[in-house]
Image (tube, rainbow, N blue to C red; front, side, top):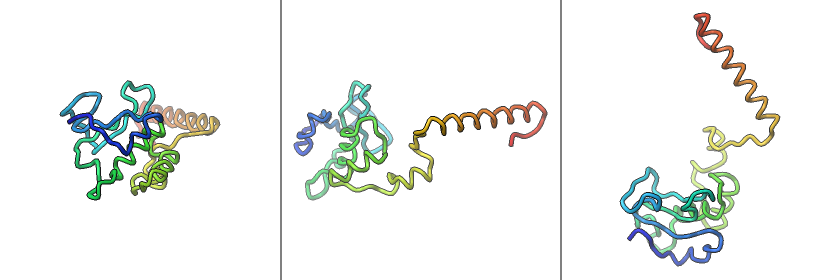
Length: 149
């Protein structure tokens, strides 16, 4: 039962959705394993772009028969290609009728230091310069028998 029909998502075919693969990953085949409950192939350069892979069929729907929040989140990844859990993705999840879990919030990602993109080149160059200076100072301290700061 690896590839299944999911009628609720058929309307998103034109936007990149290809299908749902249950019981492993479309890339590695039936029975393959991965750490999360599900994942979406949402980068255009990947040959399997548009596929949602789910470990278990029980993750597909709620008891009432509607698509689960997990499935809405993965669909949001397909509809926002090349976006991790950022503002664009969060907006799309809400549009689809899902909600954002604590570990997917912007506040959580900033606190953990995940997914923060440096948007200004000036900031990026300054940061790299500081890293180089720190590294040089650490190497110099080690060479002289000291402990890096």
